[in-house]
Length: 144
Image (cartoon, rainbow, N blue to C red; front, top):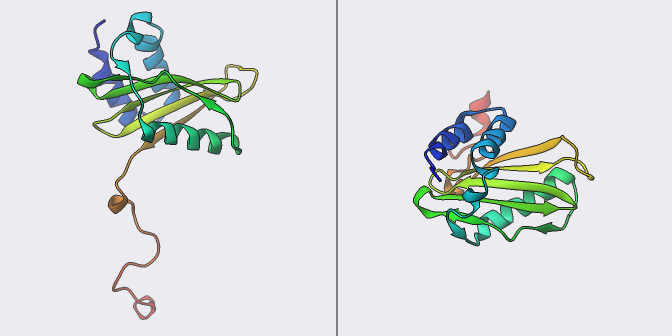
């Protein structure tokens, strides 16, 4: 299977604001092709496991059972993808390790309907997270 469209997917993942367009592109060009599952190999990524669990809990407002044990990694593209089930709903994720950006898509309803919830996520090092409040050297006197 040709993977040349992965670069286009990466670009869409970083620039597109309509998450459904990103997910549909992934489904149309990759996930709906059985041979794509055979590219790469099974992998475990603790970071992705945590992100999927926490994001789904936030999406549905409660702790919810998640099953996802078919994460696939394509090393030459630094690309993870995989399906999961959450509270009877079907979901999936994609993640580019080199740019540290991913997308989660999960059925909004149970039993599943056409409604889908999306969450794009990025990994930032702790020292790159913007600080809140006043910066050092700024005082109340400076406000007057």
